[in-house]
Image 1: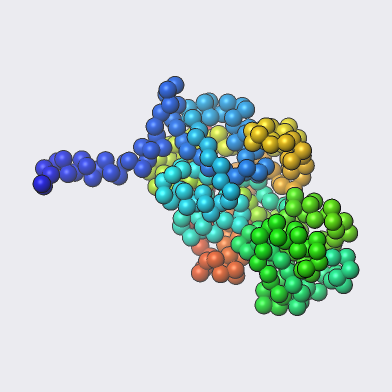
Image 2: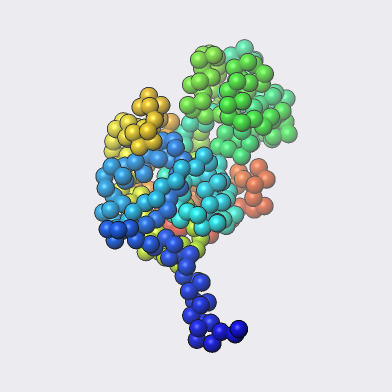
Length: 330
């Protein structure tokens, strides 16, 4: 049966607003519900733990429905299917928003946990010495990225070494058993390795590339939500900005708070802030305004092109909503 013209027009308009309405439902106390994904580690959960502890969600009229994920790509997939509205990704998953699958709404902590390590008796004293050596690395991670960077600076490529794709736990066991000559991996897994190989050598670390290149984790949102409901995104950004500042000012307490938030042993997060750079919001505003944050994302995208994740390096303005981030300061 053919619908009357006015009814058909109303139905079409309703279909357009339904995706945003899913985010705009209200709880019993009138707060707007937002569905938020995260990863259960310090960088992925500290700001959310602070927001919960400080009552920041309620302050801005929001009620979060939090869902834990094991990695960033799964959250990008959930954003695409409309299962969540916001999420968190590490630097290794930044190629997904760069390819148009989500929008980055805020930079988070800068990762400084990645290392390129080798054995003390390997005879390797520099990255250039890795030519022809077997290197274990979890493909597509920040470890893979720092390996590509280190090789490039040493005048090498991935073809000059024996690059072996391994999951993180396998890298730990393979390096400890000397089944590989080197590894591109991160803390706290390196602490685990050091129990068996205390004299390992760190050839390079992520901090060596700062500020020329940084490894930011990020908060992301559905493309449709950013396009159609900037007001909700701004409310969430206010929560994230205030939560970030609390973490930056209370790093030791933030480690304990994150453990409590995740119902994990406090020892598991002790020292976690030492391998991250927590940038206060005022500084992030300045770095956003002068283009530095966009430069971070551009640098990552360039690496993803080298890694074959992206066909070309897009302008960060196409996927980082800098104006929304800065606008949330008001």
